[in-house]
Image (tube, rainbow, N blue to C red; front, top):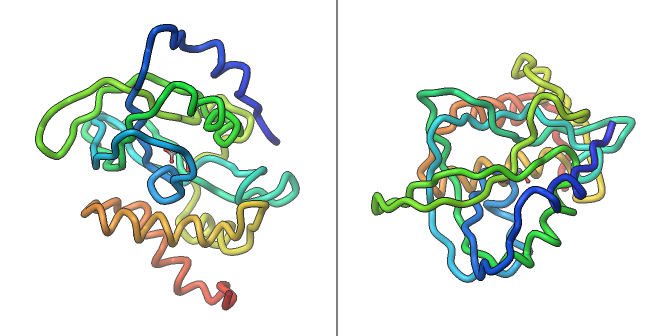
Length: 192
Ligand code: SIN
């Protein structure tokens, strides 16, 4: 089921007088940067863990066979590493459409590699959204990912590209790397 959050996000923040704002990306926003930005910096946010618990009916799956993409779940000791972009508020007109299947914009503090901090926004799909799928055994999640494909391409590409990007960022996201390993040994990947 899809969960269109475009209108919710548009009424969430008043960008009047704001020239630029930081956006923290932890999933496809790390590697699919199809929006303009003023500055880009690796960053981390505290208290959130990346999980493939969100359904994708519009990008990496279909309403009949949803894929799985990442969201963040609260975990006090967790640190989520990703990429921060300083963007014009206009960029959210596009990103709210891209992230419309259940993601809402939340304020967050982020820490850059030099220890400096900034406030910004992050898209999170909370467990009360209609497209939320939740926890499942790694093998089941990997199988669902292997079999799903949507308008943005195979769900497997999303997982493999994210894993590569996290490696480049020096991240050790055990959840993502465990799913990548399951996917690669599943025997379900087709040559593309
Ligand atoms: C993000 O990348 O920050 C949000 C989730 C996604 O679009 O994959």
